[in-house]
Image (cartoon, rainbow, N blue to C red):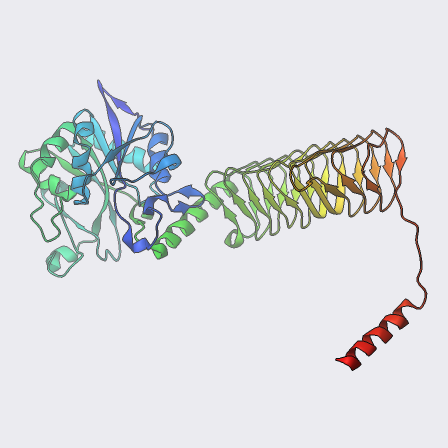
Length: 472
């Protein structure tokens, strides 16, 4: 792994993120669009950091706020005007001057890996070059800039190929292209930046223009050929974003599978970049694991479950359910068709079954809420069992109130608990009970209205309906 320091100085990663991204047709800055749950700009930042680079600087446009999308310790520099890639690096000229090495990345090329960065830096140092350009060889180089080499394989220049006349037919036949990723020695780069011109149709400074300047100074400009196609996967529009996200998802799924996770159908499974999964867990089709979700070992998730920012314990099962900002400990069963909302916590061996909704509540060890129930703002003791249709009426129209159900209690079907209320340890409620007062431990609470049967009601109702139809 590449070190973030060399000699008395240090290596700086300079990430260009000042582009306007107009082709995204979005009010959100391009580099803030998510790629598998992580802001686009965070991908190259984290890759550089994992490669051991201690100082990371992001070049942004005026008024741009990347906010919480940047990890702690990342600095920003403003590019005053949109004047090209060379202008972006010129905006950080003081950073360049005080750095031994400068790694240049693009914020809209998110899938450059830590390994690729480390390999580039190692190659750069080994060649004693003033600049090392990461290149790639493509069967169809399209409009990518072509790498023109001279004697000994040294790079002479990068020739643009975006418009007719930019390159000669011989140059267009070159299959080696510029990825837009570079490693420079800081001092020579700072000097060369002062000598490039924006005398072109776009009035911009192009970073590749420093390469001929370095050559004129007798400095070495070398190439590092990458075999990872992701170094060319940039995002200019939403179609590009979909391609990049598809590749990111493929890589994420493969890494989990190589680490011992069974993913039954990768084509129908979505796992965000920051999700962790233990070995021997099985992810069924149609499942989405989002945010910072953590899944333990030996669990089963899905089919068709969506889990966001949750913890799922070892050997737990989540079937056909939606979970958000909650915690499920070991050996639990959730679903099918459960909805666990923020603040829900299922302790060891507990169950939230079919069509159960839980919010801001703790289900104690071994407790069961089998089906058709709503548990909100409640504490369910260990070993308790809630009958079908149990409802905690937690909201009085102004404030939320809590319900406490003691360990080993047994609630009959259709029990309504009007909070604040407490059911003691080992207590029972009868079917259809409306509980408005505390139930002592080991007591049975019942509440019922006298039943009255109205005979021949159906016939009289039909008669009234027929009379109404005749009058209308």
